[in-house]
Length: 591
Image 1 (spheres, one colour):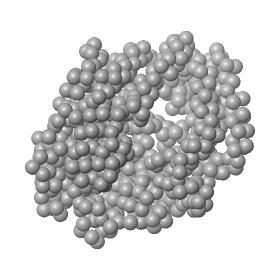
Image 2 (image 1 turned 90 degrees about the horizontal axis):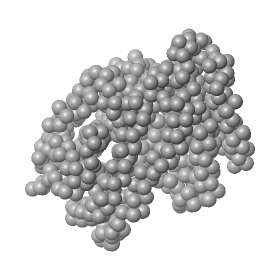
Image 3 (image 1 turned 135 degrees about the vertical axis):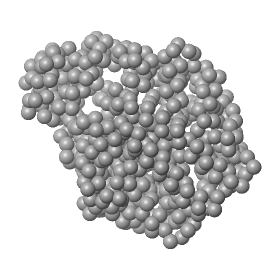
Image 4 (image 1 turned 180 degrees about the vertical axis):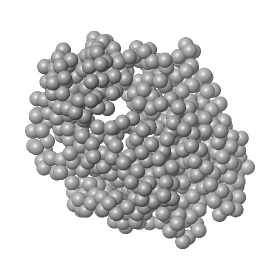
């Protein structure tokens, strides 16, 4: 379908950002003129100058965010339009220029007397910048000199090259062959592989699995070299910034206590027998003598007749999220009525789904809607992101509005869990109920257990490098295989292919990112439970979290919603939720 064939009500209203491209270009030129921060250099010990800098930085940031969102959205509407590809490139160039221009700020502030910085915390003029100042004080021990910071900044392009090299291999160079799928020869791609694993016949899954991993294994030496370089880069930076380890550096940058990471690995490890039980159930339900990893994604309950067009799905999501109250439902309807969402799949449009926002305009959502169950959940998920941004932007000044990545998946997953609970309660058909329970188990398996398994692998890989041990393909495959056997148990066949799975995980090039998916779903499960059992008081507390932006550290923000990740309690409840869901599923499936 061509974009001009889509009804207007199913296109996002990008004019709310800029009425025309000419308005965007004028704003871009205005933003370019604002990148002049050198006048503040050497003068930040004067509180008046520092305040002026913060305000100038905010002014630039708000305009930059707006033009960046516009450029990326226009590019994502149709990537074949070279004009919008150029817009996107110009935005990246502008950000690089800005980052270089302000590279003096952190080193200069780190050199200031701590008493001076602490005095600003009680100065009402700096109320909007309190958390920023606390971070600067906290970062003093890990901030380099201006010259050193400039050198690191100049090296960023080289450091990013490991991810770019892997992406090039992953997207263009992996020699994926043709396979038999649905009665015809089909080029194996990442998308086709996912489709086959989800719903292909067993012989098709086996062929796709073996050929997919054979393609990665043919490049395993090159991928090992790239990944090893990426880990060494992390080790270098952790030492340069005076951290005890790469994990310590990653947690510090997110302002997250080490106890959170330890609680995750500990409680998941203690509850792996529950995962083993689910894998054994899967083998029994499928009726296989041997279960292989290409059997892990096929649904245990055949597809149900659940078809909803976009308009029906949106109304259904609003109903399902009723526990969040009338205000939340009204905002969902506002997004629908005022065209926050781009709905239809069209030629050249970016695949998948996402939410995007800037401070002074409503959020936006990109969809490629298909009338099935997964897409109904996608609507709920992406609007969760959007309303998190909406509440934070509405309640916080610009400097405190953008929430940390650590909590980025919480609101979206709360929506998914609440919608799932509503559907389970609403389901009249036992087959649909079985399907939903299986869906929930696989959501927890994929996001909680699997991402924690990834987190354990990258923790051990970095520890090996920190001890000076070489990262070889044999060592990394052996490490991954050992962790995989512990996570999946004896009911599944562990082959060489799966021991090399680490070689295709792009998230490993952004170290210590994946664990946040696991803590995100754990937080969401606990929050949804509180909302459904406590009602309005829990909703009010949740809205305090949604409105928190980055006004304090993310673990403290989650405490506002009743989730304390510095204790084991929320982790243990999530494990209990998995077990309870498994029991209910087993009873219905008569396992």
